[in-house]
Amino acid sequence: MRPKGSPEELEHRRQRALALLGEGLPPVEVAERIGVDRRSVRRWKAAARAGGAQALAAKPAAGRPPKLSPRLRPRLEKLLLGGAQKAGFPQDLWTCPRIAQLIARKFAVRYHVAHVSRLLRSLGWSPQRPVRQARERDEAAIQRWIKTDWPRIKKKPGG
Image (cartoon, rainbow, N blue to C red):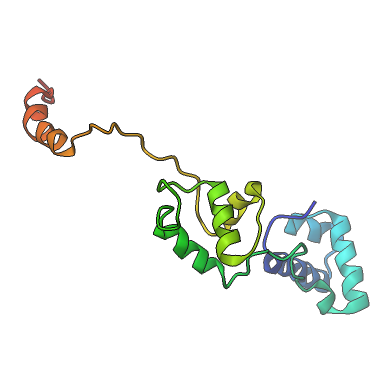
């Protein structure tokens, strides 16, 4: 299991362990101070002995590169902010299938519907539900009621 933290934070932790070992502390005490297993400290010590400090350097995260390149993501976000109707859909509501269609149409990149939410989360978006309102809703009448009738019927504090 991968430990928590960015690659830079993990590298800093390994470098700190190496510094403590350099001060003469035993691996068990270094492990306690840093909050890791003693075997990790011994592994880092062996790696540093064999390959120097570079052996403890942060490595790029493994995994498949994203289908939609980072330079195209701002364009996608701009399209999403424009609204679904502007993008050619009948209602102004974004759904994962619609976003997958938009990406395929505009960027020639196919995303499975289930993975669109991950892409949206990486852009800082979160799922939202539209507020349901009656078609007959009269906003002016509601504001008038709030200003005139509500203060008249509202319970007064302490009364």
